[in-house]
Length: 330
Image (tube, one colour):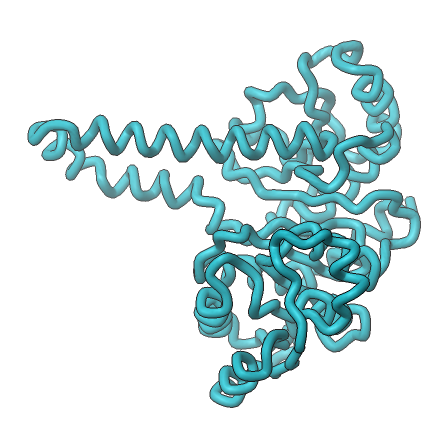
């Protein structure tokens, strides 16, 4: 092991097809990262045999499970020995540097906030996601944690998103934009106009407003908005990408002649599909808590789980939490 060794806590029960896809994802992550250690939380009959057969996996048996349909905060408070709560506690106690789960998103947010706690000065943790844009990937936040925000919250989102882009995307000086209905500073709601003024003063790299059509272009590294708008934008992009790929496939295979032409274009089309596949970029980080917390989609496959674990490891190695704390303090 090298000094890059990092331990990531993983929820074995997170996801629609858990634990099988999670265990396969853990194996894939271990295979690509020789300095990765896993603390696997979940039922004893699942995690103990799995860990016993792998040198770099530690079993952390738990006796409770938070279902997808449960009330997040109530479940976190009542099920203290659940795989999600125990995973977050490992981070708080310093036994793991990060936590990954594809389980109940609300429960992951509640557990990370209540157990890890917020970084000093952070008023609202935010969920970020990487958008596979045309020029290069960009970070969009908030995408669901805060439906209603104040202008100063958007300033902090900009600072946190910028730190994430530096650590995970490797961008030294990320540009930051505010999602709005026009480029002019006077456009949009009162919230957007007031946030624009504050971001000019408080967010390094702020370039002004970003319109919705610019999200997919990737010309701005970090795009800031409230959780309601961000979630709608994200779901629209996901649905549009899926629909377009399906329509292209149907068009290219509708006749024998088109199928022959499609065989020539198969390689570049597969490259395009790969580039816009969200599984490539791992899960969504909850930024603003005292520890790395990556939340995967409930339908995550082994590849998505492995990518989420990898993102958690990179964020931990890059000192994401300390970077956010420093940025917010300034």
